[in-house]
Amino acid sequence: MNFRRAHNADASAIQDVVFSTLREYGLKPDPKKTDLDLTDLDRSYFLKGGYFEICEWQGEVVGTWGLLPLSKDSCELRKMYLKSMHRGKGLGKTMIERALKKARELGFKRVELETASVLREALDLYQKYGFKPVTGKRLAHRCDQAFELFL
Image (cartoon, rainbow, N blue to C red):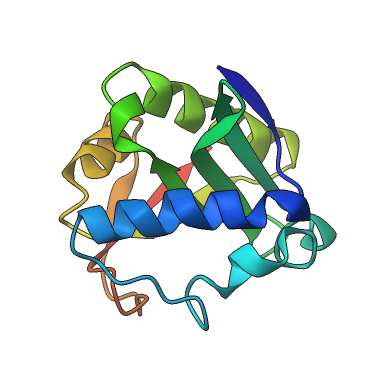
């Protein structure tokens, strides 16, 4: 496996991972709103002080995650997806550990995320790493749960 900073040239491969995973779980991609950030990673993440990383296997993008700044101290973990054939091998753990390490490096004190309950493996992973449920938050249309972690 190879982990590296994503570039705008990776956008279509990243969208393939994200959109295929969403469809696998019966969720609808939203390239004009919720997933618009994937069309220009530089503008959506890097120029705002965030980060986006991909995981490659034999030259193919198989995993993604991003940190979108919300404030000086807080960011949102977004687009953490892994192709089905690569799940169950510890890559999700490696990805979240890399994401949390990068969040600390970027100076964030709090990480939040939104997810859908059908993404059971992701929910289990987030809770294992200490994310706690947040209530009363307005969520993206396909999400029904929110979590936060203080670093």
